[in-house]
Length: 133
Length: 139
Image (cartoon, rainbow over all chains, first blue to last red; front, side, top):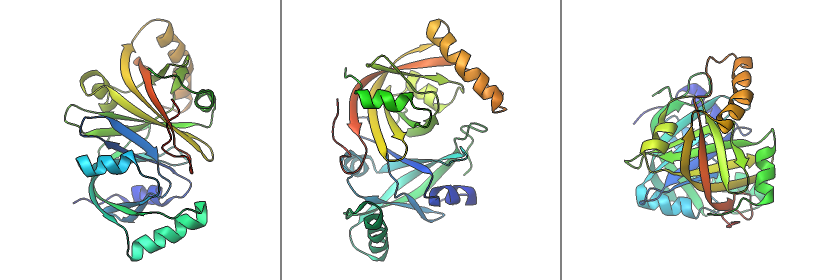
């Protein structure tokens, strides 16, 4: 298990940053969706709400991995590769996320996806592809 | 083959749009990067400038050749285009066109890199990513 550097945690926690989650099917077909609820629970764990996850959820169950890329308004960008941990339908974290999501979009999430950080890369133009962790 | 809906072409034309390109290597490992130069070529293809010889380019040439592109149009619109890598150009009209716009931008940003090639992607599917219609197929 690895820890994300502070700058990456800060970028993922930034509500103004663009966050995209990519998954892949067992046939090797990628899927990429914008997920505003991506959040660093701690330096080793990324979570996001299951709001309307269709293909993403299907792929997570098939191939057990996902990648998050974050792009800040200053054009700093990081790619975090994760192993799928689990879905949580009920619990303290899920309740907090559900409350936040409902405040923003008036929709009730079905749960929260947990991911375990495995690799971290810079994808900023100044150092593309540099492995940070 | 699918056609890009008008609103997706419009989003790609906008200066404020952001695009992220997901590719997959032969082992099924994902790569997801921000691409600033993603452009619609007509309504059946997308193209972007490859400035770095990294994983994305390798995945297109040697990997699964299937891609997914998330397009964000501030503040609340989003689309996903799925496609198949078609061709890489390192000369010709398209290459010159991208080079003449992207290279000066890189220089302005103080980056010592130039367009090495232009990748062309054939559009196969298009989906909405905006709440509450996220996941609906558009083409």
